[in-house]
Image (cartoon, rainbow, N blue to C red; front, side, top):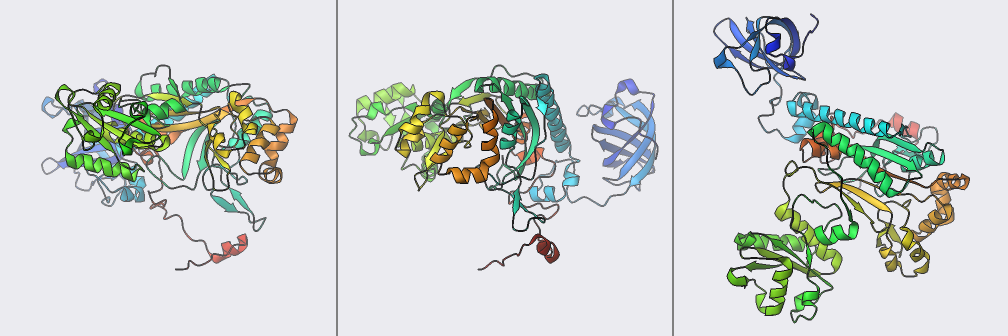
Length: 579
């Protein structure tokens, strides 16, 4: 094989007259007369047209080495859609390096292909320019993150992949131990405890691009395996951590888009829920929720005699037809609402609504005023408890206004002051909103011990924070508990006594005996960040070898069974499924 001198997509007018050798795959061939053919040769950089004699043996996806002279293409054949469209390789000689069978789908991506087929033949799908762009962009994102963290004096430390099972909010993937039959390792859902131990060990500023595994249902922004930028720093508060992460994601965004985001705004969890009905608000568009509870505090309309009434105005939405409104009402009910009230605004403030007759003139006037509704607008109202009202209208807001992922620019936002606990279980124990190592808000510490009502604990704030981009949660972080007494207090509230906490977290609790510094950290998903920055709706498009929606791998057919000898060596026995 002749040594390659140039890449296909990098040849320009400046190369005219040079003899070059390029290597790649045949993207397309076109016969021109009996003995002449045009062959489009593709490599990772792009496509170059080659003029070849006697090309009858060349087929699509053959691997070739082509040697010839760069020349200008005739004016009438210039292809303005290709960066190399003004030149071609003439007088080309061809060496066939590898023959190929007809592929199961077109590599150029012009025809929509079922995703399962794409993943089954991922080695072919990776040749597509879209996948090439995505994976190279992801590589550039990783490099930019490392530059940003190195510049801020963080040390990259690798943490174990085989660990003890710990509660992280999802099911563990477990690995049986051959040397200790009946015992299991867990694959890490995150390096949380180990990075805290790094702080106890004086590393001071730690990071890694970590591989993590969670056994949870898959969807567009979730895979069993994922990568995250994981960091921790000592003698730092949440604000300092957010500054560090803002630098890293800004560096990544600038690398891909060419523009550096401005300062990232902050919003409290409570404000995010009240304005957007979500703790991962998409702030690219308006349609903000408005509280209308006070307006209907003395209403005679029974459906509005509820703890909370939230409203949402859609400008120019009065042209929504009855079928569309019925569909939205059905969706609201599926989301948990008892119903959805709509009010269309006509001329001179006249309204049309199935429930207009149940509202007084003053209630209607105040409602339109609070929502700033004008002629041609439509208003939607939900009356329920606060949690359900904001949740339903938040989903309705996205249904009516959310733009595609690659429209409207990139709008980061920090959400801060999350609740420490999100709900109370059947045993009366609260469940942590993030993880059990999150430091409560300093102003709310007294509430942990003073409260005898588990429901009151839901009012305790945490020093936790999330980073959100265009409505996708990129990641979470918090100031950590570094004092053994507070950590055990949280464990007790969660129903984890001292004996159990010693079994599950003894190595961390013991480490706290020897001088743990105050510390805080964060982790964000690189898959999600990469997908958003390149304009993909699904993180599978930025992962080289993803799992399908069902969690299987059509390429390797994983998961598969293992033979009896392996099971016996591991001390395992598979119990047959019963109907």
